[in-house]
Length: 184
Image (cartoon, rainbow, N blue to C red):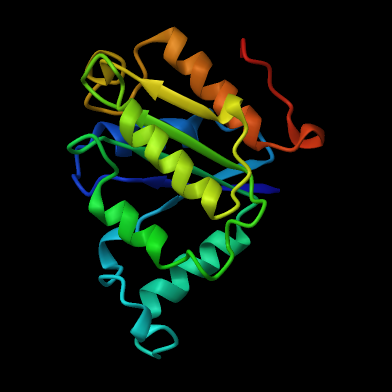
């Protein structure tokens, strides 16, 4: 079983990006498990002096889930033309621990704006590449006008967005495990 760890960069309970992560989990074909990471709010503020402290359970769980995953998918909003602070904080905790070394990684940004959060997307891609994540161009997606493409229940309402998300998911799956077509 191939496991993809999906991470929303938003803390809002009704976030479009969180609903998008949940929708992506529903698009996974048999043999592919999309596990949603829900611990981003529990991570303490990054401080390298705390490294190795026994009470950093949330950090250890974050690292363990990343290590166990075959690939990672981020879906983030854009705040003030950048990545939300909580997501950047999560990444700061793993900069030197190596969980992203050559790990297949996807970056999606979704926004109500017409640019789809492209600045946050570019910033996140740059940060992850510095951390040696394996990000293929097919695994990068900006989704503009997200409010018109996913409803309050988390159901995708736009066929082209669903096809694009399947394509991103496919880019994370090893060829031998990929058993769906973009048209399914």
